[in-house]
Image 1: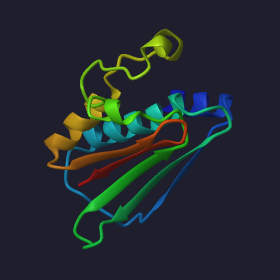
Image 2 (image 1 turned 90 degrees about the horizontal axis):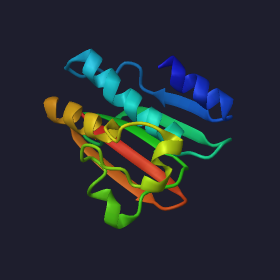
Image 3 (image 1 turned 60 degrees about the horizontal axis):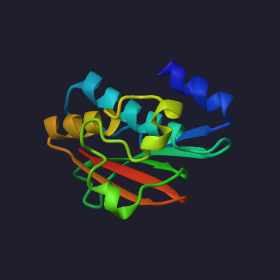
Length: 137
């Protein structure tokens, strides 16, 4: 969305999108776009000024599925929180909720969009190093 690009530009965050443009997956385009936009939005929100966010689209090892990966170098998520971040309204850093804004629905939207498409969502994160979310269609 344009507002995310504006926020990224204002904070000096670069967004790098790469991958195989010939990849295709079946599904509801608007729902997939919304889920991917939420991943990028979260990456921007939780990244420090001047950071970079990377989004890639590649085939999996077997060439049978499409893997979309969004990587940031932001605040990260502690191990004990990682299992809950896809719950509706769950916020990792409640003390920053008003400052950051949002509803706590972003990753819940991603999860439900993935489930609708029989896709898998996985997350790897380390506090103060960043987060990688993969959606495998």
